[in-house]
Length: 631
Image (cartoon, rainbow, N blue to C red):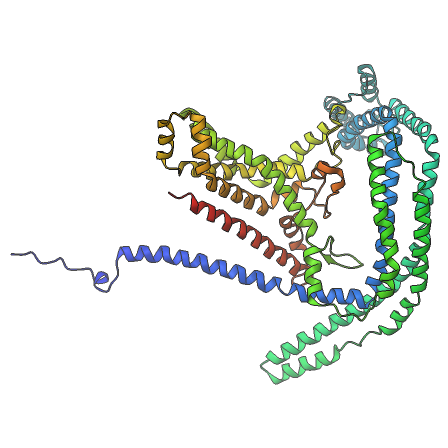
């Protein structure tokens, strides 16, 4: 007889099963991930899209208060100051270039003395304070302090910086003077003072033939006195007008908040109380006509000051020497000559801009969007005017990414090709885990390494005379684009390596077998068959590595220098050795310090939206290439 089917569990009879439960668990996790992503996007848009109307209002206040009018003159003053700064740098570079030996000797001796002082200052100050307190020199406490200071001094003398431009005898003599130095002494050691005096004498000697250049620069600096005084007077007036407008805006916002609260109040008494408070918070409309008329009365003086400045500067700048003898001074002189036509053109355009400016011209929303996307200034929390231009942040992110990928692509892809095609099993077992282990290093630890080790070593290396020919050397800032790019390259190598090796593994083995059958060598098979077949996957690995670099925060915040300024590209490759800031770094640095709901707060969310779109586009492009590598 056929056996009866086993009775089903009561949950099974109702349609439940373990298989369905497992499917529901994973499906719900996938759905939850999608919901979270949607919520993140909605949150970013909700907080960020309110930025542009708020920024438009700030630009409108900037115009109707007259700050924009003042900036028409202020920008020419800034250009004048920058050009004068370049000329001064050229002047001193010419002098210092001719007495570079005296300069380096004085700097090295001073650096050695300062390093000793910094390391012994704590015990020295404690000892001196107790001596000044009148303690008995034979007291036990004073003896202990002297012993501690002596121990600290011996440690400091063993860790002094190198002095390649001092002779061994000079260094030994300076160290001996520090070893026997009285603890109460405050003046510089005699040898340090002698070298400083020698450097000052050399400067004086080489400055005498440049007296005409010095007079030309001084005359150029004095040409802006009239415009500077005029701008200063206008600044005080328009600042007061802006404050009045902002106070009225705050009171109006408070009134709207009270009215909204009154509309939502449940009890009539609360509603009446809030409505009464809203009536009392009405702000008096600030007087704009009077201050604007006073500002416009200065327009003729502005026009005359610009015309006078233009004529004076054109004549003075023509008196600059044709060339200078020192390379750095010559480079700065060429930069000044290149900037001169731009500066004079700005002075030529100023009268037309001043005459055409109107305070009642509307500020469209597109002006706020354009200012955000193409602005070169990110200025927040200032007394004058806040500007939110992401161009310097975007340029900094791209330059750091370029440095990182230029180092990570050869290293990551090259390592993947070697491990996959040429390495022995022993090498594969050692090298591959080591490279992938780099991902386990916290980014903040790499930031510490960049600050304390790599950046310092690179800066010290750039001081060597034998490397003075390298563009950008010597490095002024140890925290810069190149340092951050090198550390990000180290972080992105494991990503590029792992994905590139997966792409090589995905190439069907029949390709290599066919190539071997035709008599191709191992190298020919790798570079003419395997790598071209895996090219899409390798490109996807590079794009995902770029996404990792663009989205990194901690390393760039610690190591990039955090200077919100487009690098000076006139220095060529040396621009990569300048400090910069990034999209991710500005969010991490400022988000915790801004008032919630302010224009600045919302601007950071817009930066986050832009960053989200960039990384999303990179990852989507990478996944498209990954799909092409599937067999």
